[in-house]
Every structure is written in C-alpha cells, then in structure tokens.
Image 1 (cartoon, rainbow, N blue to C red):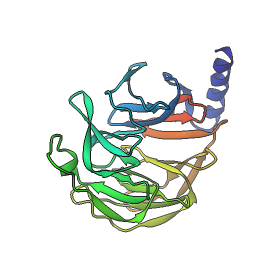
Image 2 (tube, rainbow, N blue to C red):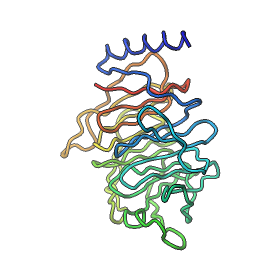
Image 3 (cartoon, rainbow, N blue to C red):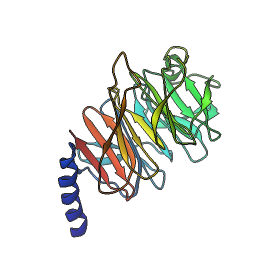
Length: 257
C-alpha cells in the first residue's frame, strides 16, 4: 500500500504539470471500464460486476453481469459477455431484445448507439430508447459504415474503426439519420464524448488525447492535444468538468483542469 501511495503522489505531481490535476478516485478492485454522464459514474470490473459511485463508495448496480456499461441522457445501458443489450430500470437491468451489440453508448441526445461484433453500426431512436416496458423486439436502425467503438454527445458522434481511424458524424435523436462521415486526423482504439461535447480518445499505446477546436461551426474540431501521463490509460470518460480514467493497472483517477 505504501508503494501505491507513493506512486499516486508522483502521478498527481506529473499530471498537474500538464494542465490536469489528478487524484486517486475511490478504488474498486479490478476496474475494467468506466463511464460518466448526467452526474453519475458507473463502472464494470474484470468479473463483469457493475457498480455506481455514490460519494466515496462504489455500490453494486443490479444483478446482471455486464462487460460494458454506459450512462447518459438515455439512461443506463450495457451489454453482457454474450452481447445481449440491457437497460437499467426499476432497480435492475432487463434485456432489450432485437439486436446483439458488443458496445453501447447512451450519451447522445436520447438515442442509443452501438456496434456489433462484425463492426456494423446501429442506433435506437430516442422515442424507443425511452420506452421502458415496450413489448416485442426493438427496431434498431442500421447506419452505413463500420466501427469498433462509437460514442455520442450533444455536438455529434465519434467512432473508431478496426484500422484505428477516427470518424465524426451527427446522428438525429428522432430518427437516427446521419449527416455523413467525416474522417479526422489521428488514430485511436476508443473514443468517448462528454455530455458537454468534449471528446477524448485512447490509442493502442494507452496514450490519451482531447479534441480541440470543437464549436457549432466546426463540430469535428481542428486537432488533438496529447494529455501526458506516466502510465498507459485503458479507458476515459468526462462529465461535469471531471475527467475519469482507468489505467491499464486498474487504478481509477479523477482529474480536473
């Protein structure tokens, strides 16, 4: 524990030098993936347990094992190891039938998006996504293109494909119509859009970047700014002025700038 404490003190100093001040967030053993949105922080561990953060404590969320969880305007959604999609309501996760996804994102403007294991891209419009007890199969829209990770925010949606290329588009929350794909510079394996529109990517080496120059007139931004850390980052998420990180070693960090 002493070695871990010494490491975190050093980490705080180094990250402060690059414009971000990071501290050790409340820890949960074997953290794997984390998402923040609408004032909530949720995470999964390596055993597919789901947790939410309340104050300084992680509490178990629901009874369904999930490998990936997302929180945002559309609520809390996730997928399990069989790629079944789930939505959280009335105290637990229930399956949303109609499509299997390997990754799902609830951070748009009410719509839910995700990708299949074959990298096809799909969207559930805001009307259907908000229906908690709709009977029968959900009718997902299939979007053109292929991505291995997809995330949406108020200014648009960002994705990365199997070649680690980064793309931007706008997805209508009402009918899942898209504006067409714009390829940007850079390379990444994961991308996350905050509920205020800030965009962060992680590349294959665990390096973290933020998209700069995003505006109403240039929603795809103008370039990437490297956020330097002294160890690889596995996952990043941003909400309410706070950047949440999971390192490759499973340490959870909370950062501000």
